[in-house]
Length: 93
Image (cartoon, rainbow, N blue to C red; front, side, top):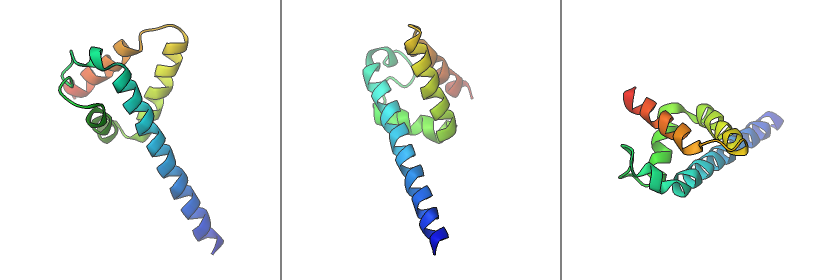
């Protein structure tokens, strides 16, 4: 019985983590909407961009991207350029 409870808590934690990843990526897309308009995803909403990236890359890779964005931001770098390069890579793939 305790293994079922443990499994349920792991699933719940993974769902929360997935929800948080979506929220963070959606927020980034909204904050940088003007720059993203000039890419091939310019016609999509922040929600659509988020879903597309998670579907194509998976949650682990999105987690790495969000960590990279945070590091670039702390160091005063250009997070939008980094994200646009990722989008161009997805387009080419």
